[in-house]
Image 1 (tube, rainbow, N blue to C red):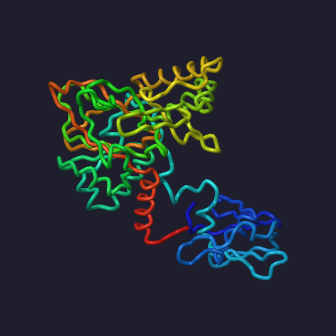
Image 2: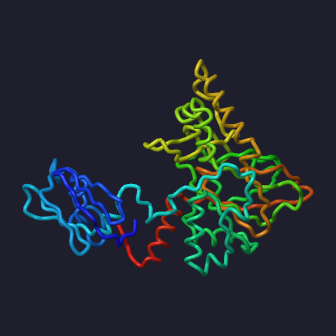
Image 3: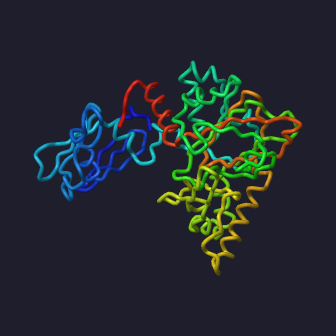
Amino acid sequence: MTRSQPIKRIAFTPDLLTIEWANGEAAEFASIWLRDNLREHRDLHSGQRLTDVVDLPVRPRIRSASAADGTLRIDWENEAAPASFDLEWLARHAANNAADRPERIMFAWLDGGGMQASRDFAWATFAEMQSDPALRLGWLTRLLQSGIAFLSALPPEPSAILDAMSLVGRICETNYGLVFDVRAVPQPENLAYSDLALGLHTDNPYREPVPGFQALHALLASQSSGGASLFADGFALGNHLRVIDPQAFDTLTQTPVPFLYRSKNADLYAERPFIQLSCRGEITAVHYNSRSIAPLRACGRDAAGFYTAYRRFAELLHDPRYQLTCRLRDGDLVLFDNQRILHGRTAFSSAAHARHLRGCYLTRDSVYSQAALLRRDSQGKVTS
């Protein structure tokens, strides 16, 4: 909705206000919601509430409502003080109005096998990200919408990933430190540090909280035919499973799966479903790592149903139609939502051609915050 839209009509009952804009769109606002959002009940500096729900009338009733000069005025029954609301503010807070936060509009991509990283996802050079806030906002918005984005031309320095990610969000330290190196080592504690192929997975489902985003910087890309990176959209695959096998989908959203990781300096355990839903039934996270699944507690008659659903989802993950394949070059960096995008790689021979990626994790909320801050700066104002 355009915020400058004039009002065509206002209608109200004691419990509900309806605004119809000139373009035909309409929005409803409950009287209790309006009473709970009075401007004078928020701190002028922080914008935080000064009142609690127990301070509100149990059932505030609208006596009259009118609009003039971009402001809505409401008079209440049994209250002397009227209320006023900015019409642009009401338009922004109308249900399903996502204009202020386009990064929360998800662009799902199921058929990754038919896509190209260089063509279908956001790319920018490190220098562009540093110098152009508008470009950085566009890049971040596409990252959050698609779950994955790429940078190129990072310097071949161990600290380059920290410099780049300082433009994106807040790095999350783990038992691996602020950064970790993905390269083959003898007797690895984690199979990521081997030459083996890694099937599609999400990282660290055994951790509380699960890392939100993961960055991988190619310091030395494999020069052989192996070592290609694989990605898939877990939200798209989850929703595909919901359509083709609703019973399997329900099982994977309702079964707590134990995940475990042990090393000489960490012992991590958590239980969560493969597919996590919001209160509205939307997929909010995918947790899948076949290398880290501990023995399931439900080892009796319920186990067969879980394993049937587990296999059904795994078959989708193994299907090349759903896998985006790309080869990172020296200096490339990929950043992806670790609770949405599954990643993996093909096998390679480090003896023949060394491969070295440096990685780090970022908190999920900080990446969304960075996009919101850049958008707010571009608009030159703060909105609540």
